[in-house]
Image (cartoon, rainbow over all chains, first blue to last red; front, side):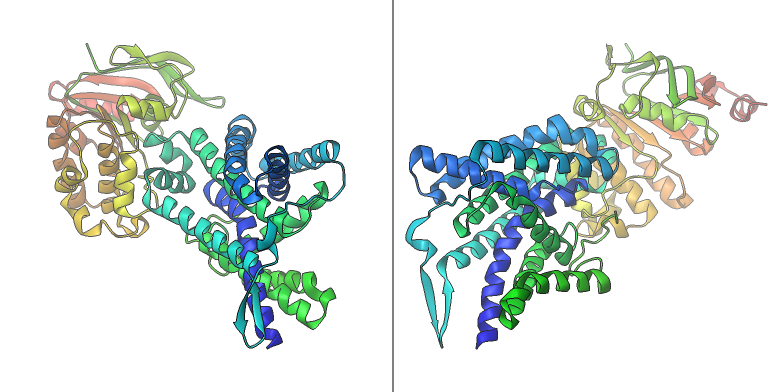
Length: 291
Length: 232
């Protein structure tokens, strides 16, 4: 029963990791950009939510919409003004620039908000649980997180598969120059992709902020979890990202079951094992260029 | 007034000059062929017109307006479509999606999905197929169809026949009159002369980046054309 419980809790935790990794996966899938600031942008989103909540006194869940708008706009500008200048020059310049961005975000947050831990208070839902019988129970909040991750990935997948803009994003991902030959403005489109990615990071940041306390230096750990999730699932594959998150979450929960000190280690070991035996991930996107 | 006027265009790949003061004129409603050997600058010329490659000097006038540094995607919006060398279809998209993405700019005009598939019926049973698994000829039909979905006023065709069996080449060329009668002007580039000259009312022969011969194919002798083509 304990292991079943671990499987359940790990799966739910995987929803959170998938949410954290969606933006990273999308941005890599569309423009082969590895965003090393992914975790710090999620933490930044949590702080933006904190500012909104403090200024208005609303529940953090109601702050989701304004925070998404703010982050999406910032993402579009970030891409148009800075990252578009780097993506055409190979994989290394975007790495360096987003690494620099991560350092800037961490230090700016430190200056403005100090190193003290902060939290978002969502009220009673944080401790509510659903009794499944047989001594099993799941937290309402983790279930909600997984649900939001599934809806986010499903929505994104529908958007990419069924809409004019989504089609253009996939075309630009296949062949940037050929995309311009059918009239696609790659610079604008990349901006849209980053705006969407930052929108999902806004969601991830708010769920992070409600789930646990956060501090300016928390970004890199989030980045590692997101990174492992994307690699486990397969680069550029959205549903793979969900599976990757769940694999990571379950691995950590099982590690925790053996010994609480093994939680993170177990996740990293499973990640390394997959990297060793199946480096393309569990669900690699067909035809993805290897970097 | 001509639809396209390429005036004294020079173009470079880094320090290597690919085009030397090239002049080309294309009148609306015609088919013009550019022929020349490998490396004579034909593809470069089309890329300059499409906005994918800069002209260091000279200018490209389209519909009387100099295009200057207008980016490629804006030229598509104005009605210039390129079917590139190597076809460059989107491999992760289905055939249908490739055609739909061709209409990304929503330019109004006669070409719709149905009309494009009527023009190249071989595409009809393939619509749901992944574009990457098509044969070369099917990919070429798709590439032309994708360009037509943008309702171009000027269609640039780069080496339609390259690597394809003669039957499929004939099939593709058989579609050109319907494209012209729908109101699209065609500038095509070919290495193989016969097919191109049969379809075209005007001809330019490029040799090492320069126009070596120009005129209506009917008025040129076979000897004059091969002399210009091979530079002998």
